[in-house]
Amino acid sequence: MATNGLRYRYTDDGITVSKPYKFSLDFPKAKYARRSGDYIIVYNSFNHPIKVDSHGIKHW
Figure 1 (tube, rainbow, N blue to C red):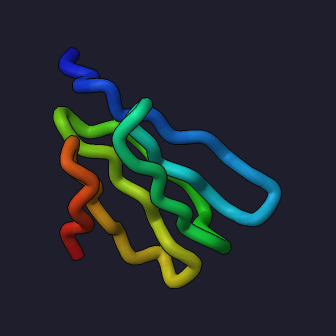
Figure 2: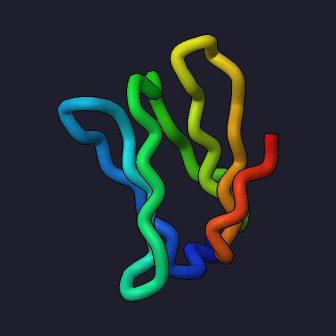
Figure 3: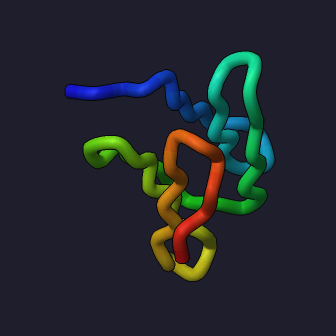
């Protein structure tokens, strides 16, 4: 499984997706996240998936 350095963690307000020393993206009020291949998929409060790739680009 390729992790490419992407990490996610649950915070009090939502979910944070980060890559060490590169970027950190906050998703307030997000429900949950999961790893899928080279992406991390975050589900927002409306249960819509948002893919985050290894460059920090959001794919709606």
